[in-house]
Length: 271
Length: 294
Figure 1 (spheres, rainbow over the protein chains, first blue to last red):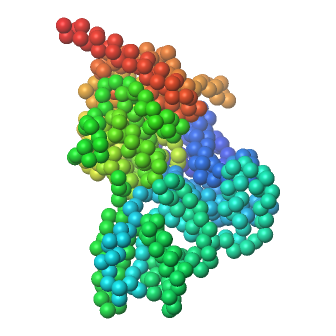
Figure 2 (figure 1 turned 60 degrees about the horizontal axis):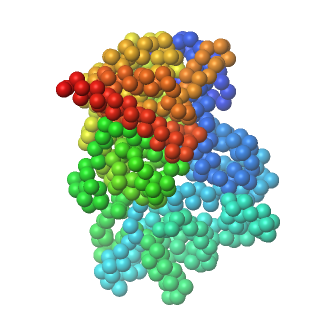
Figure 3 (figure 1 turned 45 degrees about the vertical axis):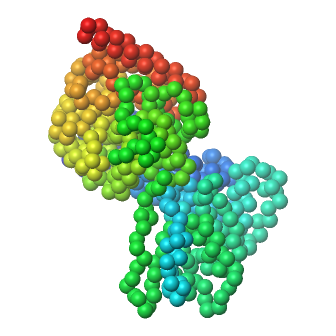
């Protein structure tokens, strides 16, 4: 008679096994292996289904059978840590990139990266954009030392393939559009976010993308902008602020080191 | 609390009437047409994020009493509850102010891994202590009483020493939690294990039962020839379960009753018809109660 923790460890091992096994389960009653298999199948189909929902374009590109086989391998390698399955699959793109049977589709990894960013944007917590009146209170001399906190649903991707075009064509099942895509590798800079109408996938100029990536990483404005004023980057900053892509800021002025902008309720839902 | 701030006209208490489990395919229809349903219940985990689905939930909450039904807290894990999961549930409860909050008598998380099913517990004193501790922790965190649903199970453990109904009664007595009596689960487990469903109902503490669930189940023959009933929520409520529901209402009195359907989800009309059938049995029970009182 195993203690509860030991029993749960044994059951978890059986449920996660690739193939049904006939356990030496003296702690279970009759036909236990077959009945345990019901739970094993439920687990697997629930997790495969969660990945299908997050990666619909990947599934269309590779077909359902291939997708299920890849998903099974991924589930074995990286099972979900928690019951909030919208968070499951962050590493699926990386897994597909290293998955030898998928090598014939070199852009598959990047389409999966894009789908994960879309998934993040879709499910991110609500967070109000940084109010311009709060920034207006910052003295002009302190501006270079302002750094921002990005909205939790915002992603920036630098890709080699036109993953955005492939993603749209595949989801629209538009074979004509798909046939016109030139899959030659070239630099592609994307911003993915949720606005009031839904998830948006936008192409950015390389310089704007790099500037935005610096800001999202928490670098202060002076470091992200460089030494010279740049009208393109300043316009981009204004656009980010008005689109609510930043939800808070900090001041890190060496002259007033230690002062921080008052914390706002960034993690909270709002109505 | 100030419900008016959210445009919510009442305290959102769940009435002793028939409600429907709200799933994604019916979101648009419900928000746009406001069907005549007494209340809705949703799976809490589907609304942990923000965005459109949260807006839908807020809109539904403005117009209907709403219950949150958790499927991932894993109250039966021998290890500690996942703090992040509990925090997300607490945030949702704070924002939505649901009429009821419920979870399952089961486990699904171990060693930082989610096993994606409601797994059975051995009915032992140790398991009872674990579940009591986790229910108390949850009730303290949410600052409210929760309901715990009786499981459907296919497996039994050789060392189980407490009948499931006694386990639930003890859990409720020790923690003050209520019981979500899933009549379909009682029927499924009783068929699978040779228990008597009437005796199961009789043994539950009537005053603790705060909600009833109804759903469909499937029957499967395993490779060894044994037949197992599986609680897949993918078909209409079985006739034996309707009979058991009538019996449950006689025993407990009228209770909020939910129609659940999770696989092969049919058009909303099918769910409305099932809810109407539950409502008819509820009102029959109410007239019986009035007749007795008169």
